[in-house]
Each structure stands twice: as structure tokens, then as C-alpha cells.
View (cartoon, rainbow, N blue to C red):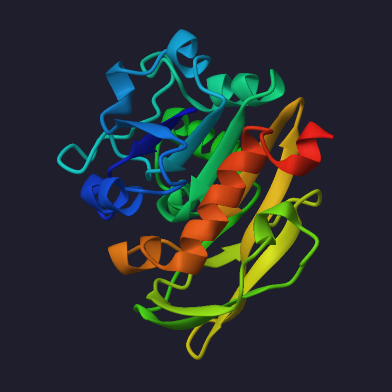
Length: 234
């Protein structure tokens, strides 16, 4: 199965994601990586994929910090992503994608703030910052979630995202604790139209992406988002 991977921004280089997805799924997936999404993605191209991983903040790419989403310029923005979901697509938002937060754009022009606001409504939260990288204990809170299947508690050295305004329909299956960051939601699912959303807030470093438990979460997330999980096939 082909999976689209959208990554690369000023604080989250695409190389981390490219190296991190190697071997995930034991060859079951072909990952098509897009870094400069502004002039590559179209709704027609997006529709070719059953699942998309977004691990990218609101930059064109790591060397161009202009906003990725710009009304009347970007062909695939929040509105097109929502349409993709409503028609049955699946999106896995990982770490840096959650940085697309209206809370961090208070002084920015509305034409850039609106897309951030609409992205918040897709993945279902606002990200308010994080302490310096620290040791975080990650653990499953809903063992019945299909994303949590086969996942044991684990520890990562990561940016402990502080989130707020969690969507009312978000089904949280993962939390994480740290001394400076307290307890935060780390993973949840949503359904939008016929489509599925998974959010995983860990994932800043390659070490996290290479952790067996995190890789298992990603495989489960892709399967569920693409509706290839066992539960969806019944």
C-alpha cells in the first residue's frame, strides 16, 4: 500500500522522518515522501492514497520558513484535507504537525491564521509549547483501542508537548508524563465524515521514531487510518 508522507520544516528536518519510516511494516508500505508540499500536492494526487502521514509544521520546508498554508496559493490546505477525510481517507498527524497552532500565531495576518485554526479542528487540539527535551514515560490508557494493540509502556527523551482544547470527540488511547511537563495526552483518534484521524504527539528525534513501541503505534495507526485493520474489515 502506498502511504503519502508530508514532512520537513525548520525545527523538524525531513531526514528524521525519512530514516524513521525505513522498514516500518516490514515492506508492506511504499512511502512516498513530499517535503515541499506547497507546489507538489493537488487534491487529485492526495486522492491516490488511502493513508497520509503528516509530520510537518507550517513551513514550506526546512530552508523556506514561509507558511505552507496560504489561502489562494496552496492547492492542498486544511479544506482539501478535510474533504479527503470526509470522502474516506485517513491521516496520521505526528508530532510537528500539531505545531500548526493558532495559539502560536496571534499576531499573524488572518490569511495565515485561518488555515492554522482549521488544522486545529482537524487534529483536534491546540499546542501551547513544550519544556526542554526530557525523559517522558509513555503509556496506554485505552487497551481496547486498535492503535494500542501490542504496545507496552515505554520511555523516550523527547519534547513533551503541552496541549489544550482537545476535541470533544477525541478518543484518547495514550498519555505521557514528565517531571517538567506533567501529564499530557499523547495519542487519540477521531472520525471525520467517512475518514479517520490518528494523532501521536511524540516524535521529535530519530531515536523516538526507531523505538519499537513507537513503530508499532505507527503501524497500527496506518492500518486503522487506511481501514486495513482487522476491526474495520469485519
